[in-house]
Each structure stands twice: as structure tokens, then as C-alpha cells.
Amino acid sequence: MTDKTFTNDIAISSRIRLARNIENTLFPQMASEADLTKVENAVTEALRSEKLAGEKYRFYEIRNMTETQRTSLAESRLISSELGKYDHSGAIINDSNSVSVMINEEDHIRIQSVKPGFDLFAAYRVADRIDDIIGESVNYAFSEKYGYLTSCPTNLGTGMRAGVMVHIPAIVMKNSLAGIISVAQSSGLEIRGAYGEGTAAMGDLFQISNRVSLGKSEIEIVQSIHEFTKEIIKTERAARNELLLLQEDDIKNEVQRAYGILTNAHMISTEEAMKLLSLLRLGTDVRLIENVSPKVVDKLMTEIQPATLTLRYRIRTDARSRDLLRAQHIKTALGDL
Amino acid sequence: MTCQICNTNPATIVVKKIINGEQTEMRLCEKCAKSQLAEVTSMFNFADLFGAFTPLNHNLNAMSKDHGEKNLICPTCNTDMEQLKKTGKVGCMKCYEVFGEYMEPYIKGIHTKTVHTGKVPKIAVAENENGENSSLREISRIKRQLEEAVREENYELAAEYRDLIHALSAKEESEID
Ligand SMILES: [Zn+2]
Ligand SMILES: [Zn+2]
Image: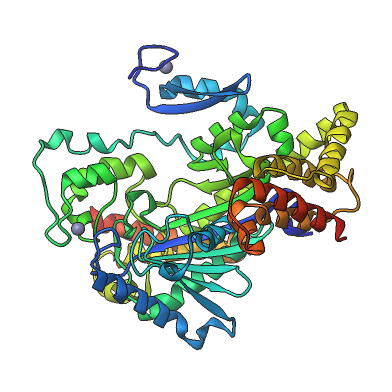
């Protein structure tokens, strides 16, 4: 049995991001319009090649996109919300949304690779390959001592941020999160809300990632997050078992109420929906809810985010009409089974 | 700032705690932080696996204190010390040469270490082929292969890599001496 089949209920996705800059070109923050254009052309040229193994890539020119379109890509984690601060910023994203290359963000190049579930090594292999492809036509800013040179010293060395998104409602319910945050910190890792910050994280979704990128190899970093995530998964599973053992009726009650509200509400905010979807996800994982697929719940968590929802239905963007639409969208998605 | 528990040692670590649903931050010395974490770590017996605490002393403002307030400027991108301290970001790759000496403690504060051991772009490998330090590069390259081998549970191969690294490290050390 692989880690994957066993852990996808708790580990939602695995992500690698590599920060790169082009040699002898000012970093975006200081770069001239001409520099930024040069970077844009170099990266698009590097990725235009046939080396991308037949996969289709799309180029998104940030300056030609609306605020909503941009935010929606950020809500789907395909770009960062910072992209667009500088001229000639863009993103090259593949059809399956598993690879995106941001251009002229904080660094000239940010390569991102995502895999569903718990598969950080696979995500790294993809990012590493894209890095090699770009590196064949672009000379990277690199020093023997500090490794890949980045605009912010926090990214020096490997330029890598590796992360696993985990759904840990039972750990949150048991209030054991603080301890885990401390252990992560002491291990050079970090755990923070995937949507929203800190303990108020929406949907009990957290991102485990490395804080240290210099002085460890890529594999070492991936390995440490992999091991840490394994422990988190174990802890979450134990917490779920304990909750079910000691408070089965309470959990059943919470989960079924969540399902009831999600399938009946006429209006719902992002925050409430995320909270209830998290309970529903827990319910499907522990088989308290049989007729909803966890995949549908995961998809909903992105789809109900404000900009993504707005974009899908092309409506006026006030909060009230979004709340109406959100409730409608959730009902349809959960009824469509 | 002194440690909020013992009130004697300097606080170097921020510990986040949730008490009655409220998150609080405590600034502690390493010793008190360790004892605070002891109960937590007992459930995570793997904490030691990842090495010691990373001190959170990366304060950019402390960067130039010991070096006077001379306002250095990077000739390539015109970023000056003032700007660097304000944004926390450098403007170009040469900045690391210009400000490197002053940034070293800050970088150490973030990463604990200050020398890259990971991937090397192809160009740098080629340039370095006959240059100095190529055995260090080779070591880190083999180290990665070793890790890969261990991950794939190919222990025979891993043992070979390990021996190779030992041999190269010995060579490297005698060269430095
Ligand atoms: Zn103390
Ligand atoms: Zn500079």
C-alpha cells in the first residue's frame, strides 16, 4: 500500500515552489520596464519549446486581466495575490492546473507544481524538470555560497518552499493545534491556515511548509515535511478515533446539521460554508455521510471563494448576491450526485 | 527583551499557545521554551529528527548596528542599506556581495546555516569543473543521490554513496587544513 491511498482523506494536496532569478538582471522590485520585458520574453521562450511533453500551457498576461479574474486564480492557488505588482507579470499554467510558472513576481521566476493528496516527492520531480527546462535557455542568478539568489533572503539556497495542505478538524476540535505549531517551529517548519490566518483558519485546512531553504538539500526538505506530515496524519487519525469513541453522537449531530444547512440554506457566507464543508468532509472521511464524495467537497472549498464564484456566474459582485449564489451553488453540487 | 518565564535569560524564541481558545505569544529563552515544549514533544517523538531550535532573531534592524551606520549602496541596482532594512529585500544578485557581510547574521537567523548544499544549475556545474571547491559540489550531488537511494530503500547503493561521501569529505578537509 502506498502512502497515497492511505492518506488522501487528510492530506489534500502537495505543492512545490521554486524561486529563480535571471543572472545579471535587476530583480523585479528594482527592474526597469525593459528588464521586465526581457524576463517575460526569456521565460515564455524557454517554455515555448516542445520539451514540455505535449502538455498544453496557457499564458496569462496579468495586465490584461480583471481584478476578479486575478483573484480567482489566486483562490485556486495558481498564482499568488502579489502577482501583478510589477509590469510584465504573467503566469504560464498548464491545462490540468498542476504546473504554473509565475513571471515577474517578487522574483523573476516562480515555478509551482501541485499534486493531489500526499505526494510531495512527485511534485518535486515535476518542478525540478521544469526548472531544468528553463535553466537550459536561461542563466540563473546563483552563488556557490548562498545558492539560488532571491529577492528576499528568506528564500535563499534552494529557493524552495514545499508544502502539504492538510484537513485536520479533529486536531482543531481537540485544541491540540498549538502544540503542533510549536513542534513545527522547532523543526524549521511552519504550519498555518491555508485560507485565512493562524487558528482562525477556514475549513480546518492548514499548510505545512518549510521555513528554512538554505543549508539543506531539496530532498532533505521534502523528506522532513513528508515525515512531519505523516505524524500529523497519525495524530489527526487518532484524534478522530477518540472523538468517535467518546462523542459519537455529538459528532454525528454536528456533521448531519452541517449537511442539513448546506443542502437547505438560502444564503451563506464563505466563512460559514467553509466551516460546514469541513464538517461534511470529516463526515465523508469517517463514513458518517455516505452519499457525498470527498472530492466534491474539496472542489467546493475552492469554488465558493468570492472571486471564483463571481467569475463562474458573471454577476454583480456585492456580498449579498454572492451569498445567495453560493448557497445555490452548494445545493446544486451536493444534489448532483 | 528577557524571557517571560525565568525573567533572566534573553528571549530568543517565540512560542505560540492557545489558552481558552485565545492565541497568545510568549517570548522565551531556549531553556524555558524547551521545557514548555517537553510535554508537547513527548507526543511527537520525532522532534529531534529535525535538529535544534531555529532562533527567531532575524531582525533586520540589528543588521548594521555593529558596523556603524555607514549607508552602503549597491552600485548595480542602487539599493542602499536604508532601503534594504525597510523592505527586507535586495534589488539584484550583486547586493549579496555588497551587503553580504552585514546580512550574514540575519541570514543565519532565518536558516541557521549559511552555505547552500542543494541543487546546482548546469551552468554553475560546468564553470566549476576545474575550479576550486568542486569536491564540495560533488559531495552535495552524491548526498542527493544517497537520499534518493535511501528513499527507494536501495540500501546497497546507499552504502556505496555513503562511503564515497566519507572519502570525498576527508579529501576536502585535508585540503582546507
Ligand atoms: Zn527563560
Ligand atoms: Zn543590488
